[in-house]
Amino acid sequence: EAKSTGNGTVRTFRPEMDGRYVAEQRLRTDLRHAIENGHLSVVYQPMYRPDGSEMECCEALVRWSHPERGWIGPNIFIPLAESMGLISDVTRFVLDKACADCAEWSGGMAVSVNLSVKDLRGGAITAMVAETLARYSLPAARLHLEVTESCFMEEPVAVSATLSRLRANGVTIAIDDFGTGFSSLSYLDSLPIDIVKIDRAFVRDIGTDPRRMKLLSGIVHLSRELDLRIVLEGVETQEQLDLVRKHNFADLVQGYIFSPPVPVDALESLRVNGVALSKAGSRAVSGRK
Ligand code: C2E
Ligand code: MG
Ligand code: MG
Ligand code: MG
Image (tube, rainbow, N blue to C red; front, side, top):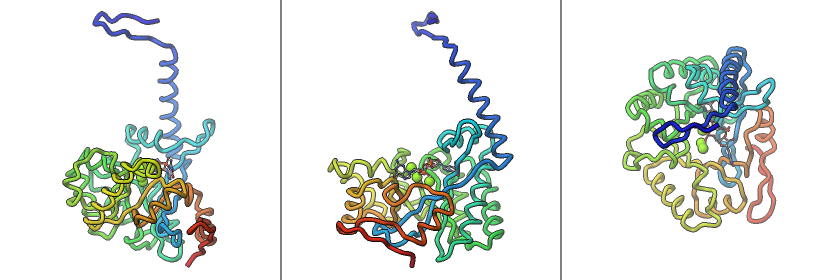
């Protein structure tokens, strides 16, 4: 039933709101349990040279296998973990697994781990990273850390200070989802970053909309002027990949055109067998170096 609140707005009580609240509380309880009992897992999405010749790095992406609801994506449970004060447990788990796996990979491939703004508030992450690298004897150069553009917006001073320390220790820093955080471009040159990951929103329509091409081109040129490496997210179609190659829009490409996120064993077979992709119209398979 709708009830007038007297100030012109109408408040509606719907019984399913109660249900939704209960469901969210349940999810919180389940998440705490999952974190405590190791029910999270990590999948990897490769980043390739645009010609597909080399897998240089791969991104660790966390997954939650819920006993009744199946796979729950990070867009749902990362914010929950943040609000419950559990994000550092998630980060510790992903970082540990990613470094353990990376230490097994031949050829010096790097692994990239996402951080939350909450990880960057204090100094604890610096010690956590150093300890984890030491545990697996992994050189710092093989670890990349991704921080979204909006983190810099939320806490510019604390985030920059922590990242500078990590970077001084040899870790590579990437700004994630670049272009979606409404940051001022004027300070892009002062952030302690090495890599720009341009959000997939800037790739989506490049084949059909000349203005989107120009926008992407502008971001790419700006990033190159600032000596930043460029990763393009969300490349899905051959048409997009052809344009990216033709205009030299990226150092590395991450997207479904090459591979979705996959379990670690599947990543290994991608590394050994290479990706099948069309090169100048013909299909080619590139093997590992
Ligand atoms: P992100 O860091 O920008 O990761 C890329 C997301 O885009 C992934 O979603 C990936 O599956 C998806 N993606 C990759 N290629 C394509 C493509 O070609 N097309 C489309 N449509 N999507 C593509 P996922 O795994 O659901 O992760 C979502 C977000 O959750 C991540 O965005 C990241 O911000 C966050 N996240 C994931 N793992 C972690 C983690 O361990 N810690 C933290 N703090 N955040 C994480
Ligand atoms: Mg990321
Ligand atoms: Mg991203
Ligand atoms: Mg993104």
